[in-house]
Amino acid sequence: MKYSTMLERFLNYVKFETRSDASSLTIPSTMQQKEFLKMLKLELEEIGLSDIVLTKENCFLTATLPANTKKQFDKIGFISHVDTAAFNAIDIKPKVIEKYDGKDIVLNDTDNILMTVENFPNLKNYIGKTLITTDGTTLLGADDKAGIVEIVEAMKYLLEHPEIEHGEIRVAFGPDEEIGRGADNFDAKYFNTDYAYTMDGGVLGELQYESFNAAQITYKIKGVSVHPGTAKDKMKNANTIAVELASLFPKKEVPEHTSGYEGFYLLHDLQARIEEATLTYIIRDFDKKQFLDRKSFCENVAKQINDKYGDVVEYEMFDQYYNMGDIIEKDKRSVDIAELAMKNLDIKPIIIPIRGGTDGSKISYMGIPTPNIFVGGENFHGQYEFSCLEDMKKAADVIVEIAKLAQK
Ligand SMILES: [Zn+2]
Image (cartoon, rainbow, N blue to C red; front, side, top):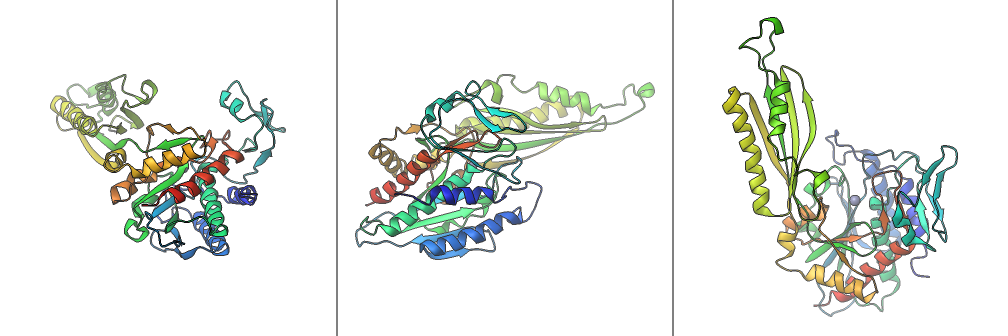
């Protein structure tokens, strides 16, 4: 049977606690990620990949499946991240539900935790299939261990089937995607492919090549605290100035009122006292010009407050990642091949923009166009996360099919 070790391998992977930690300054941010990568390195050796390297500097595990033909193929790559999101990931006890019957799923008997069809109507799409869920107290970690297992199983399959001709294929597994950092240290030159794919999407068929442009701005407001009884003409209340600053932002351009290609500002963090307030906003837009306009708007907000109150506001703004679509549009071969691969496998491609970023948002700007492909799971980053074994196998099929189609 194809991918006969997929389930067992996946259940082993998710039991490793690999949560990343935004407050840590080390690479990787948590040592558990490195432990997992060391185990994964042994597995890559076992299946017979070449050039297996786990680097000290960026903690990326890379390997090569050498070409098995003289025919000319594009050099392609597949990438997944080993860390899990900021949610309880200790003592993950995955549950396997075979031939799912379409009814509410009892995740946890003791604590009476249910995943109901009413709350998660998509469950109806999985009737008759094999689901892997949590026990209701942790996340599952299918984001992105499903991606890892699919890449590993696809490479194993190609090694076991030398009759399938393919070019050189590179794989990479890295840390700290969930804290937006891992790909900063990705060595694209060393990886050296024509294009690549992150296996880090959700439901069957997802193919994504557009992401947000992203920046963050933090305003620091310096107030002047004076005894309220004698404060006339002296106090500058950072609390009320913060409220005024926030009121200058458009009310409708926020995550809860936007969708599709619409951008937004999100007040992500707010701390205020009379003497000092800080407000952190994230800025998101698909369109480069609108993104730049949004950044200017944010600078102008500070100017307006400073004009009114004297120089009370300072800000720091930095870019986080950019829309990989701007790079991939220039040469859409990576997307076209992935789309064709899905069609060949009777999978309906769902091509939608990601209202976020992936490792590919950064790696594309390092010169390797890197769209994102589904892993066959839903409800990531929480206790209702689940994956579907049949869809995971289809994701591995997509990898194998892309390998076949990448002939020049
Ligand atoms: Zn992910």
